Image (cartoon, rainbow over all chains, first blue to last red; front, side):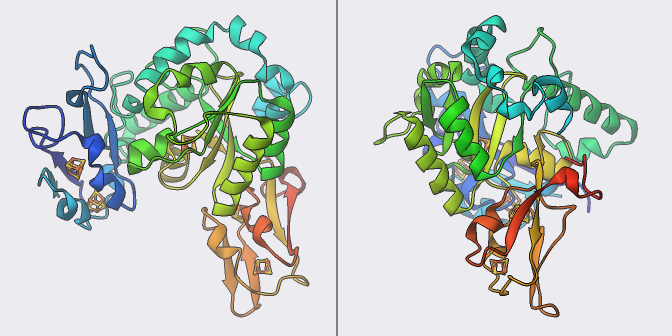
Length: 85
Length: 289
Ligand code: SF4
Ligand code: SF4
Ligand code: SF4
Ligand code: SF4
Ligand code: SF4
């Protein structure tokens, strides 16, 4: 099996204008049985207030464990996730 | 006993040595500012580049011919580091071991330093989006976590007594979670977790990538073939795929090489058919943590 790539459009989820705060969603984290995603404070964002939604985002970390089931793509209310290989 | 018992066990197991829980030790290691910095952005630990490499796509990186071996070596060195030049944005000297419920309770009753708190499990929050107040932290770390609102349970007391902690651990055991005890950083002990594969970060790195973030317990499970009724209740309890029902034998069999010695199968068995035996007494798994 080749490498899996998972992209999250941060203009739709977290960290940018118009996106939603991933802390109030997290649906991708919940549906992914192998737990590929991690929700975390973004690196490099100046945190005057660490609870500022721009500071949080989701990253697909454990890419090799993705089974390409497509559940995260389906569940994302923002259509922010693409899984490709 | 593993090498950490030799180093920090004072003749016994590392996690039963009272010194490793003491405030004096935490202070002599200068840990308050370090832990505050570490916990503030702990969820970044997999995203951050550590020595030039982040955990994103770690499985692929570990498979690269020479670089993979190098990464493995440097991650192991980091997790088990005892160097005083710790870096709070990494997980220096942070690793743990599976323990059966009776030892977790013994630690809560006799060894853990006060104050004792329960807080949301960071792993479950960052990898599942679930708030579950199952982590028990103590000593210096309690005050550090109490300053971070995202870990503080709603509608629940944060500070708890030893008895309440034991009750909480029992409840987690009944749910099927594995007790683990943690150095953070070695040799200071400040947490007992109730973990679940695959969203526990420690167990993930161990189970999926073979990194020694969590050691197997000092025990392995043994079935008594005369007592086992073949009810299969224990099978559903094993997170490590170590136990299965054999239709031929009409009882369960345990793969000792996979068994983490958590005792969850034993705790559910109504027929007392499973016991934990010291790992060191079974030549095939002796020393294999
Ligand atoms: S495709 Fe399936 S396995 Fe892969 S990240 Fe999405 S939910 Fe997880
Ligand atoms: S499901 Fe979509 S919107 Fe929700 S946290 Fe995941 S990526 Fe963001
Ligand atoms: S080690 Fe286990 S209980 Fe502790 S934070 Fe991680 S999953 Fe939660
Ligand atoms: S729970 Fe006990 S009796 Fe039932 S199958 Fe397991 S070992 Fe046998
Ligand atoms: S066989 Fe029993 S003791 Fe061993 S890992 Fe599984 S549940 Fe734990």
